[in-house]
Figure 1 (tube, helix red, strand yellow):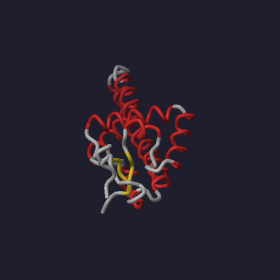
Figure 2 (cartoon, one colour):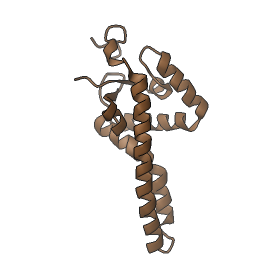
Figure 3 (cartoon, rainbow, N blue to C red):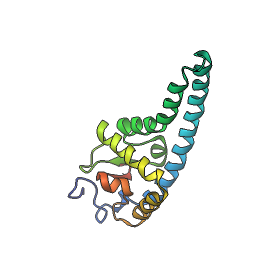
Figure 4 (spheres, rainbow, N blue to C red):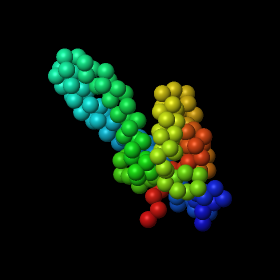
Length: 153
């Protein structure tokens, strides 16, 4: 039974939240490896672009490097409501109505995620919330009204 907010109620449908903190951590590690891999490709392309344009492509290369992690996460959440790490660990993000994320909510969720990751105290608070809150929400989930659940079958 789905709760008042449109997402599974942790009291009545605990299976949607069982093991989510550990799965999120593993997904975080997988996504970190994917993003580093993307960065290697971007750096290689940026190097080629910079050499071929005698330095003029450096600005474009730096912009691509800076945005690639955000774009990866935003595109994955927008299209699948899950990153590759989340897909591999069997979890997905749902909005406050229990629906998959749209373009805007995926962008806002990604921005909130990066704000909390950039500031270690916020990330620590987020992980504490994730481990202790009934809906297993991190800080950016709480502000967005999103939840990460085990993918329904």
